[in-house]
Length: 113
Length: 114
Image 1 (tube, rainbow over the protein chains, first blue to last red):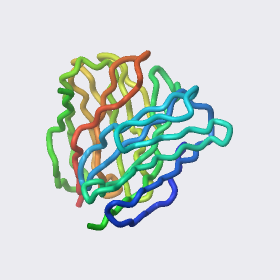
Image 2 (image 1 turned 135 degrees about the vertical axis):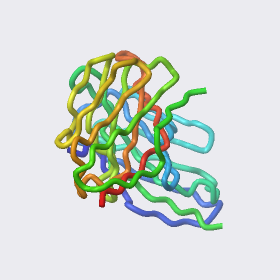
Image 3 (image 1 turned 90 degrees about the vertical axis):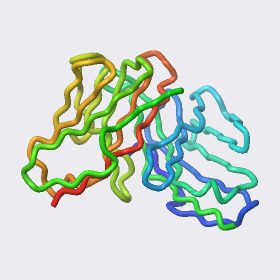
């Protein structure tokens, strides 16, 4: 079953604007991660936020986590055409004999030059 | 630099064929994972392995098996390929049980079953 659900499914913005993507999840988590996927490629890890953190920054990325609402947001500031990709949130929890990630279905971001 | 490689980028097979997808990581990671990715469904976990010769089922193991004879290599096997197994297959690895659980992904194998 899918744990994380991203919103919106697709987002189209102009270069220089900010892009905000949201993720909601259902059960308790150890941490929440955001990944990026360029078309036809594998996923690349962007940022991890732990359940006891509320906000984290990395370059032009800002992630927030609200465990009471079971939601997270990813903000990309001053977007560039090269930011065009799919973005996935993934929640980490103990399942079986290893920590596993459960991925949402992603937000397709298009940044228009 | 972290690296996960997959044996093929594109693969075309016929229904009923046995298919091997191989994944190799050079980071000495303990955990390795196989996902399939389909439009609108995100990534779904097929199998994972937390040690050599150890494996556990993920969410959708039916029709698949795996093999991990060496730490760096994790193979996904489709015993008898079917058209509903046409998909993008992604391999990933992560360091060990008590780490940050960041996963490192290979480039993916796009499989078409005719």
